[in-house]
Length: 92
Image (cartoon, rainbow, N blue to C red; front, side, top):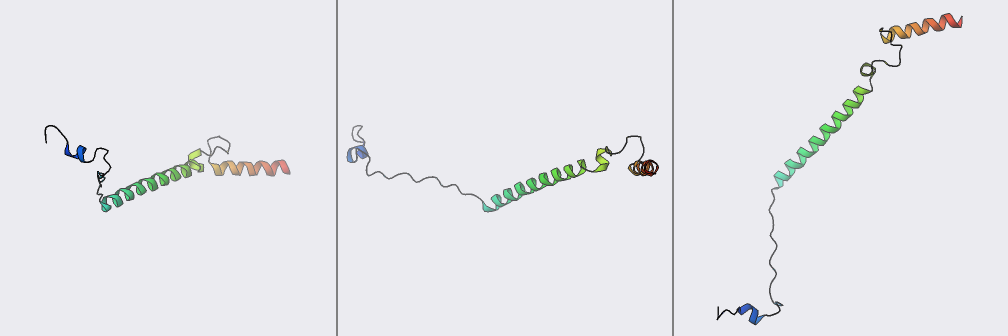
């Protein structure tokens, strides 16, 4: 430089003619993006299926222990048969 002078500052003191720097362009791999999207979709589908399975199992009579029947230690069918016998004897 000429004695510490910046030639660009002397020729263009306000910076009106200076070109902007081009932004950095990041290259991405489309296959890697597709794989990541497929993995995310599979995780979401698996989580939905697991939640649906858990709700389904929780609502079954086997999982709830047949709480609607008398808890006499018998089976659900036996408690239904006892209820039918009670109806016959009480209704007669």
